[in-house]
Length: 125
Image 1 (cartoon, rainbow, N blue to C red):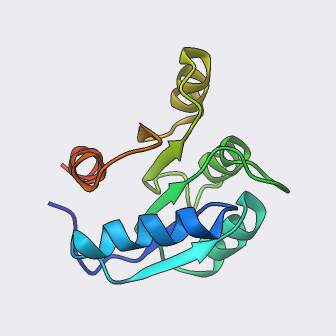
Image 2: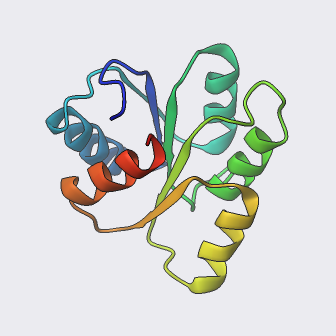
C-alpha cells in the first residue's frame, strides 16, 4: 500500500488534465500533490524536491514525457523514482518505448480512479 502522505508530482501540459488527476488522487486519499506543465519543468522540480512518485503525460512541449523519463533514469539520484505514464498514446511501439526507457507503469486516457489506484498499488507492492 502506498504512503498516503507521499509527495506526488503530476506532469501534463493541459491544466484540466492536471486537475482531473489531482482530483482522482484526492479521492484516493493523496493530498500532497504538486503540478508541472512539461518535462523540463518537472525535471527541475524532482531535482529540487523529494518526490516519492511522478505521474506524467507523454505529449508535452519543451520536453515530452519520454524525454523526462529518460533524463530521470540517467540521473543517479533519481533513477529509482517511480514514474507512471498517463497518455492518449496507446500504440504498442509507444508502450514498448516507455517500458524500455524504464517507466514503472502505463495508463491510457481516459481512465478511472480504480485504474489509477490499481496501477499505483502495483508499483508500490
